[in-house]
Amino acid sequence: MFNKPVDLAGAAAFVALMAALPLVFPSNYLIGVLTVSVMYGIWAVTWDFMSGLTGRENFGHALFIGVGAYTAGFMNTTFGFNGWWSLPASMVMAVLFALLIGLPTLRLKGPYFALAMLSGSVIMQRLMLIFWESTGGEEGLNGLTPLIRSQVGFYYFALAVLVAITLLLMALARSHFGLILRAIRGDEATCQAAGINVTFYKIASLVISAAFAGAGGAMYAHYQLQVSPQLFAVVTSITIITMVYVGGMASIYGPVGGAILLVLLTELLRNFGEWRLMIYSCALILILFFLPGGLVAPTWRRLRAAWLRRAA
Amino acid sequence: MATLLEVSGLNKHFGGLHAVKNVSLAVERGEVVGILGPNGAGKTTVYNLLTGFIAPDPGARIVFQGQSVLGLAPYRIAALGISRTFQLCRPFVGLSVLENVVVGALGAKASRGADLETRARLLLAQVGLSGKEGVPVEVLSYGDQRRLEIARALAAKPALLLLDEPFAGLGSAEIADLSALIRKVHGDEGLTVVLIEHKLREFMRLVDRVVALDFGEIIAEGLPDDIVRHPAVIEAYIGRDNDVSPAASSHAA
Image 1: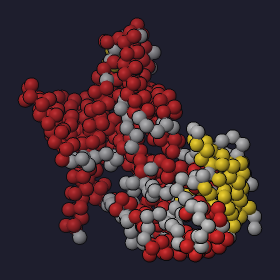
Image 2: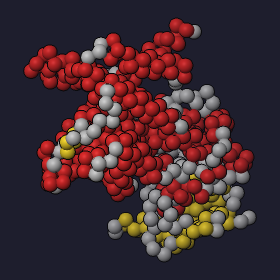
Image 3: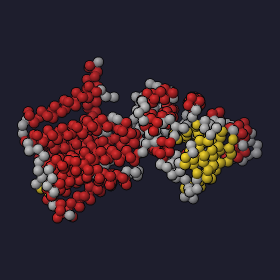
Image 4: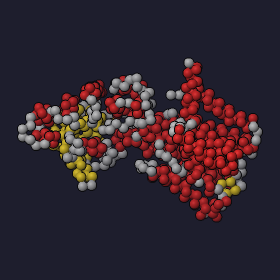
């Protein structure tokens, strides 16, 4: 199925490429784009860990991003905490929201979880506008302090976080814990007949996914130096799901590639002006239509097979 | 012999339908018990009630190894040592054959820290699926899926194995193989087995004792040979006819 030395070599090559890009092309614009792509990588990989493995689609991942970002915003601006406190605090808050939605809905069959996540993010977006006196309304919270002053420094920090989260989630996905999550996707009733507490595992995977997505949200807030209700937008959740599909569902590493690819694609298409969205959408439709298993993970599997064949 | 499972006053209404009527039965440790009955007699519902997938009407008593399992979640009942298979095979789609069996063991408390993969390979060899460990379950033939279901159920090291129509949809050669397998796991591990069936012939050779159900009610109970001649069973299977001979009834399927 997989080959450890080759997989590690592939991962190292990917990290080396991502780390070398700002050195080869030292432009603030490129570093900015790469930083955003790495953030989306964190969100895509955390989405895939819960929804890709268990098959319970989460249509409101932006809820955890927004909760993480606003936690960072309040901690940093309203209460004046040092920016680094935002990371653990946002993880805790995102976990609380994961439990709030997961506990009642993940014990049920049917679309309740997907819908509750979707409406959760929409409701939070409205609440940020309704309580504008403390949340800043449409303007949001401004004047957050950066975690790391240097732009390249922050990029390398974000890249390191992405790599760490991806390695951790890969290890979990390949453990017995991950095997149970994939079995839940296979058949819930059989899982129960095998003595597995399905609800516990679904909630546990959502909690892990939410914690890291929330941390990603806090990092994004300290990168943009402001937070706004836009963070809860449904379109963000949908973009993340698209990235996972392009990357290759349930492969964990694939969605990282999918996220970076789609963020870069959006930027590369800027030259096309008003045609940009049209070309972007057509490319997506073609990818999803002709490669239902995704683009990144299957491509890597083919490369690896070819490499192993040549080595043999 | 000690009583492994004791059930009494088991009832289930689905709306106006009285699907299971006051069923009482006891299973002794080491027995192979068959639950016989035509389609719609309530056999699978009895399994779902025993394993917690459906809650019985109030007043029921289900005691397994001296402990009441009434009202427990299905995964808790399974962890106590009751493994079941499903009438329509329900493997973990997307997992390999070996992974399916490993997952079957993960819920059991006995398997903490054990080498589950080695055990799973042994079980697959036992059910005749060696060499197919890495195959995705989706491509298995129907007969192989049935074998896999049994391997998965055995992986949890159950005290009681409930098989739901293990022979359904199989050819006669496969049925012979599978009943040899059931006899083997019963002999090897001293496992208590209950199986639901309506294919009479193989079934009668396999079981020690038969409980016949019709319209949710126990209509007869006893040794296989007596059940085949029991007038109520004959009536349930081929209708009332005074001329019917016992020989003819044993071919009914």
